[in-house]
Each structure stands twice: as C-alpha cells, then as structure tokens.
Length: 113
Image 1 (cartoon, rainbow, N blue to C red):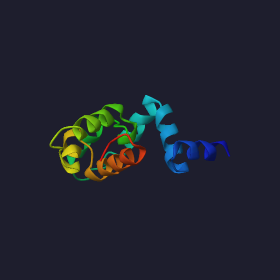
Image 2: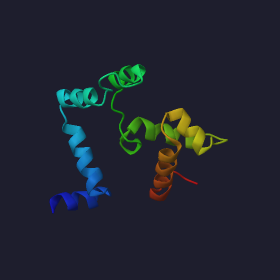
Image 3: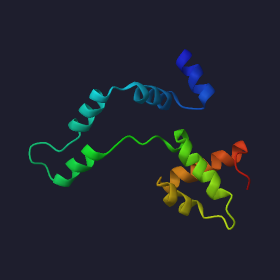
Image 4: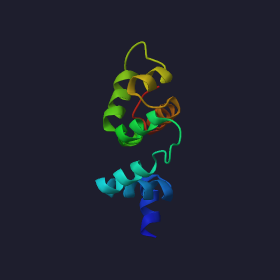
C-alpha cells in the first residue's frame, strides 16, 4: 500500500515508480550485465550494435532531467519561440516526450502560453 500511495503522490504509475526506484539503486555490475546480455550472440548480425550497446549510457527521463527542463524553460521564453519539435532537437529528446513535458509544464503553470 505504501508503494501505491507513493505512486499517487508522485503522479506516476506503479510500474513507472518501481522502475525508477530500481534504476536508482541498480549496481554498476548489474547494469553491465544487462548491457552485455543484450549484445548479439553467436554471430548474429550487426557488429556495430555491440559498440553502440557498450558505449550507451543511461539517460534520465525528460521529467527527471533538471538540465533539460531548464533548457525548455529558456527556449520557451525566447521571442520568437522555437517550435516544440525544434526544442526537442535542441535538447536531444524525442519530440513526443518533449511535447508531453511542455504540456505538463503548461498545465502546472511552469510555462506561460
């Protein structure tokens, strides 16, 4: 019940909250294991994918990235304002995630229309 209460307080689903909690406390060794196990096995295609998996790093969700949030606020205040798609490209997040975050910030009053 405590997990459900925390999810409600944070405005998250149980799945999202549980994932966030796990990712915050996962050890570096476990993270490396997950990265290693996702590599192609036994001559599977795309050798380049191994390098991409090995060099990839965890990027927080846009809602948890204070720097991205601040960039959105700064870009939103520019006149003329860049489009939401342009903002997404600048902060290097998907357009759909950026648009959702902007809508959420507008609803909370963090951004002005």
